[in-house]
Image 1 (cartoon, rainbow, N blue to C red):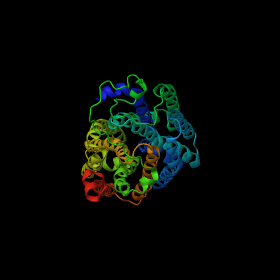
Image 2 (image 1 turned 120 degrees about the vertical axis):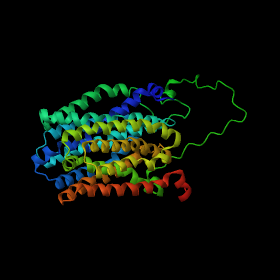
Image 3 (image 1 turned 60 degrees about the vertical axis):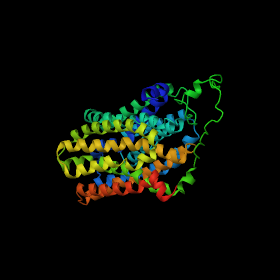
Image 4 (image 1 turned 30 degrees about the vertical axis):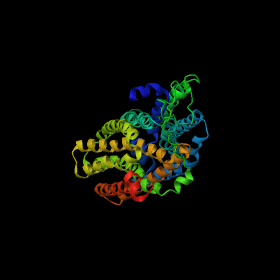
Length: 430
């Protein structure tokens, strides 16, 4: 089934996924980095102290995720989604009125936990659970909200802050989230999907709902010797997954991109200053990041469906590796655009590949709990980036040293991830 036919058959559920991934942008590091100069000035924070503060927020979110994220396996999807959106909007309002570090902490925690932690979790878990044969396409389409947010939000919010200030900006963000979710989500989730993935022969998640008993009857006589139907993959529990050695081989590659993007995006303004680039140019380069992410996100879906996610997984970091190599030796403004586009390419590939790979290996029955664990590990690991980057910069380390560290980390992660490929399975055993 082509992308267009697949979208027409499942447009409501897919647009729900796009909306949630777009809302996730409000809780991402690139969003908070736009407010960093104002917060440092108003609350008297250095790069190192804010990095520690931001890491504590992120760690607290990580502690909440295993339980809160796992509730998606038990709570109805519409109810769960509305609660998460309400938390984000309320936290944005609180952030606009924060006059102490305590309230700033609670408010950023709410926005970050709902955005970075749960919005993408809801979207990707729903897509992986409701689609089987077309899981790659579903994840590719629903993930378009990520680059859409990265293309629209940095420039829009930067202009908004300049026009009305950072506090009023968060009030408008809260109203925007509430209005858009109230208008769209009841329509998009009019027929709430079940937790059962579609059969491979069905073209869409709606097929079972639109097909009555008569149309499901066999219309042709069965063959005398029908081909055997392969057994569905066993669904692992979260505890079983944590005892599987493969989990520890593949995780560094899955965590590399979030860790490095958190560190480099949070301190993108000092990076720009070190290269002689303006803040406006760096914000504009997010459009290139989003465009590359969109293109690769759409492109990788059919590749996953044809060759499997585990075959793609170890190689998804190659564009990011090239991006840091370009950044290391380039200083022309075009370098920033190339660097951002290569980072976006890896993000486009990895976002869909990671979810599809874990669904392939560990099944979908407990995918909510499994993804909650993965997101928890991701948030814990990204919490290390702000404090590490901030203190290293305060200590006088040049950005070239951080970039070399990123290159080494990416190379090691790719080598370990080869364990999950068919070749790696033959070498190490399944």
